[in-house]
Every structure is written in structure tokens, then in C-alpha cells.
Image 1 (cartoon, rainbow, N blue to C red):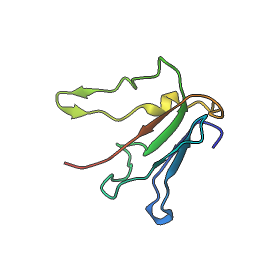
Image 2: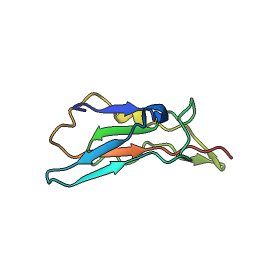
Image 3: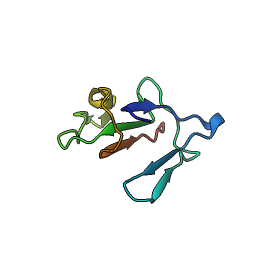
Image 4: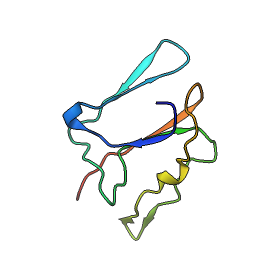
Length: 96
């Protein structure tokens, strides 16, 4: 992947992500069987974004103990993530 992206989980394809840095070390991000899937409220499963130090909060919080819809897409604008620092947002979804 070269550009910022939001991707869904896909259990049928055993989708997972390999994350590597400037060294030969790699980390595998494998969705858990109880992580759920995105919907209209949960918005997405994983985002890979170019790091910007001011993009640490999507501005969405809790109002009277009710979660609000995630707004991470506002950070996704097609920038290259090749050979740069990235941020990975991973969503686990559950229903109460």
C-alpha cells in the first residue's frame, strides 16, 4: 500500500496486515474472531494514515454515556505512506 487508506476486515480472505519499518523487523496485525465488523455506526475497521502530530483525536467523544460515530476519515486525504511515519487506527466493534 502506498497511499492512505481505510480497509474492511475480510475473514473469508483471512485478511491481515504486515507492518514493517526501516529495520528488517515486522509486526503482523491479525483481526481477532471477536473484533466484530464495521457498520454505519462503526464506520471502518482499519485506517493507515501518514503521521501528523496534530491528528491524534478525531474530535468525537461520549455525550451522556452514548458514543458518537467515529470521524477518522477526516484525516484520510490520499497522502503517500511510503517511506514515512504512519499511524494505524484499528477498530474493534461490539454491541451491548
